[in-house]
Image (cartoon, rainbow, N blue to C red):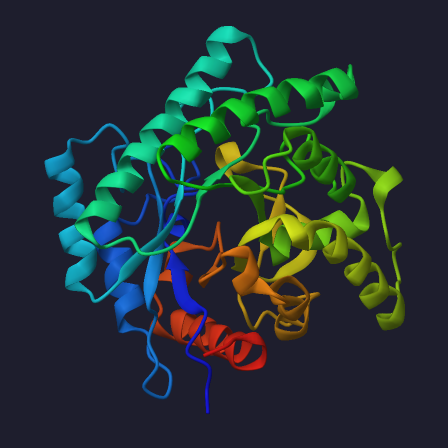
Amino acid sequence: MSNSAPKLHNAMWPGLVGKGTDEGQEPPISLERMLELTAAAEVDGVKFDGIDCFLFLPHTDPAASDGDLIKIADLIASHGFDVGSLVAPVWPGTVGDSAMGDEESTSKFLDAVKMACRVAGVFDTHGIRKRGVIRIDSAEFGVDKWRENPVANTKKIAATFREAAKIAAGSGQRLAAEGEICWAGMHSWRDMLDLLEEVGMPETLGFQADLAHTYLYLLGHNAPEHALVGEGYSDEEFWAAYEEMTDKLRPWTNDFHVAQNDGTVHGAGSHDKTGKHCPADDPNGKLDIVKASGYWLKDAPERGIEHICWDGCMFPNAMLEKPETWNTILAKMIEVRDAHGWS
């Protein structure tokens, strides 16, 4: 019998991340269209259970009124979806600013967390949101400034995160910091672990593991001193290193993204120089998605994980508009659940 849990979610932010109106950029894909594309996907009678949302325009105004948020919730519900994890707009140029910055910057960061918690509360009360966390990062792009004083700067980020966690706990929410090589203090598995331990609030602030981003942790991009494998690694070396990394970070992991990576470092627009997501069936993909997922999903219910989400940012709009793209993704998500899920 197939497993019924975790629930299968699709991310809405591939319609936003790397998109824009600047020269060379493709336009964003609306929330309405992303919902339609997700709802149309079906594999052997199985469909996506829900979505994870990016709390920023043009999808969702994080300062929207309760009434406007209820309209969005009704729209999502009309497709038969639940809402899971939410992405807080913590970056400069959105609501927030650097968690490693001055008092003005960190205040903006905390304002973004407060706004996300309010939205989460509205969705929770509506009944559309039944699971998930609020995703954050350090909002300090690049590691050069952090390297000027790594210990002090990690403590600064941790202090901001600690305040954010207090805000979340007071709202009945949990936070997840997504490890990614472009974010200062979170750019390697070791630095990510140091930051989580410095915050020291595992019940409220955990780790969001993304298969694509954590693959680059192994290679030591932006932190060669923390590389666990070198170029030309063998399968035996890879899986030994993968187990070492996941054993360290899994106890903190409270949200999980299924993804693929081709080993290159590439982005688009303001999200440049990060791990490149690939299609689920990309022939250049470096990961055995199903096997790798099992390392992160071990004992997942004990860590409060109730759903998994596909993350595939910076795909061309033409690819996102193809029904087969989403059917292929959904099929892989079902494989992950069948192999590592529960009932």
